[in-house]
Every structure is written in structure tokens, then in C-alpha cells.
Image (cartoon, rainbow, N blue to C red):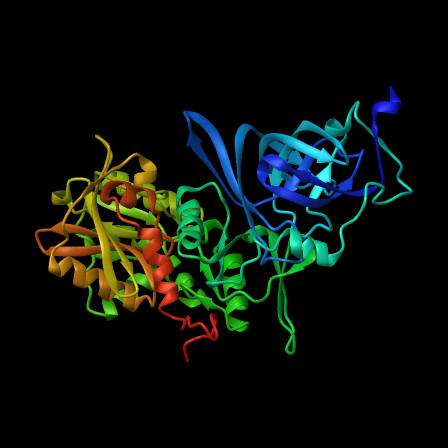
Length: 465
């Protein structure tokens, strides 16, 4: 019966008692199927053997100082398509909505609504059978004043105690990205996940800008942590350069990332710094194939695509005939390749040294699966704790310095000629090394940012000159 339904306008203030949100402005939209609540720093966890999710909310639009920490039982994960066609996987919770004098449970999806005009969207599934909408009216159930909002949220308002840090990456669900976000928050910083594909730039001599999904201008960041996939190196480094142009501190610079992704150039830089590598050949013409194979000591040998990463595009050719076939096949596709001597005594093992700010903070041994020669964790390799020798640590630190990387994963193999450097990674994964060593590597990355800033009571965000 209509007499038992709540009559609302197109905009109303409501609350979520179970989440500790005393009042929040909602857009009432019967055209939207699901309801959505603004949330940041979203992280699932286990509580009483059940799936829960914790998240933070800035309940007042354009006010990032007021924060409420929430948690709720997790009931689902769904792909939600916005009115603009953007598809996003969201966590779904169920909680009580209070609007006017009525309270009932609704399902709500969690998403960052910083670019939207409302912190809450009330969809038709939540209103069905309980609400009547008069789209010509607003705030039929009352509206708080600015003074009353300040009083309501006085215990939630906090001055920023740390830095505003952006994590520039592609997938917020990756272990490494989640750990970095968590580590920054644990150390009192305001963390923001910035999806590379949703950023775009304005090139202007007087007012350069970086915009985010929906037109939000990304400004007032103190630091950026670039975690750029190899497939989007060009665009990711363009964004990093733009942040650098805005005088934002970047944990790894665009130049360092770019040169680390160029396998040939990076090897030349490393050799120039006196760091030993397996003998490596590079040629453009198929006519040079025979001498190229002899150059690196013959078969077996390793053939690497210059654009490969995480062990992809790396082939072991066990005979000269196999090597010729693979090299000529790659060259017929106009692919740039390196040919490298095979270090048999390494026996499918390498050492990953994690370098942060000029120090080896952890090291592990990675071992390939049986029948595999690549030790990458992404390819099923296993990690175990190992104590790197002083020589291996020196090589790792020297390599990171040669590449001008503040954060680097340096891969070394042990050979009869001594330790040899295989590769330097500018976005090394954290899962294998944190799991094996039980060290807070993400926290060490945040500390490296803190070292570049002066944090004092008078000016908590003043940069070190």
C-alpha cells in the first residue's frame, strides 16, 4: 500500500547505523538498478571464519579530511556497468539503510565516487516496495546545515598527518598493489589508487594537468609510486613524466623505468658500470646467425625477446639447429632479440635481491619447476630464503644505481665465473619475497618516500630541499 511507503525527492539525506555513518547525501535514481556507496581503501578480510570487507569513506563531498572507517560482511563481488559504459568489479555488502523514520536492509556496491556529485546512489532494487519518488522535489525528509554537519562529524574530522601518495598501476587486486596501499595507510598516509588507463594529461606551458576518470584533476599529490605493466610502458612513463613536471616526487623516475625496460640498453649501462653479465649477442640480419651463435659460446643458448618480461619471450635452444630456427623465425617477424650464453651450472636457480634506496632489504632464491629453466615466480617457480653474499649485494646495489632506480628487483645467477647479472626489474613483485622472508617490503618502499620529505608539525608536507 502506498500509505506505508516513504515519499522522497530526487535527493535525500540518509544514514547507515551499522556502518557508523550518521548522515550522507544520496542521489535517488530509479533508473539505476543497484545502489552504490563511496568507498576508498577497500580490502577484504576474514572475521569469525566469514568474508568481510573494510573500507574508508569521506561522507561529505569535497572533504577528504573527514574519514569514517567501516567494515561489513561481504556478500558478493559483481561486475557493474555504469551509465557511461564503464565496467567495474565491485564488492557488495548488505547493511541497514535509515531514511526518514524507516529502516530496512539493502545491498550496496562499494566504489570510489570522488568524481560523482553524490557519495551515495540509491537504486531501484533498494527502494522496491518501500519508496515513492517525486522527482520534482528535493530533501523532503530534511537537510542538515553546514554547522550541524560539522557537529555530527566533529569526532571524525582529522588533520592530514602524512603524505598524499598515489599508486599508479593497473590492477588494484594484485598482491603487490594491495600491500603498498595497506603499508602506506598503516604509516598514516593518504593513499589513492590511480588506474593508468583512466588517467589523461593536459600539456600546457602555464598550467599542465593530469585528469582522472570523469574529469577530476589530480593535484596536490606529494608522491607517486609507479607500478607500470610492460605492455603500457610508453603511456605509464608519459604519465610519470607529467607528475614529475608538476614537481611530484616519483619513487622511480620515468627515465629510469624507460631504460630498465629496454633490455639491450640496460645491459649496455650495466656493462659500462663494470657489472658482469652472461655473454650476450645482438644482431639485425639473419645472415649473422651463425656467428652470433658462436659469439656466445654455441649451444645450448638462451634467446630473449627485447620486449619480454616475467620470463615470457625467453627460449632455451638446446642445439645449434634449434637456435638457428628460433633466431630466424623471430627475425622474420622483425622482432628484436638477444642471444645469451646458457649458464648450465645455475641449474634453474637465480637470486632476487630487492633493492630500496640503495640497500638490499631482502633476498630470495628462486628455483624453476622441474623441466623448466626459468625461475620466475609467475611461471610457477618457488622462492626460499637465501643469504646473498657481500659480492652479490654489491652487484645488486651497483645495478640499481646504474639504472637510477630507487626500487629494483635485481636478478643474479651464480656461475663458475662468479655472480652474473641477468636483469633489473623496475616494478618487482612483492608476493614471493614477502611470503618467503616475512619482511614488510611494502613498508620499506613507503619509508623510502618518507626519507625524501620533511614531516614536521608546522608544515607536515614541506618537501626536503
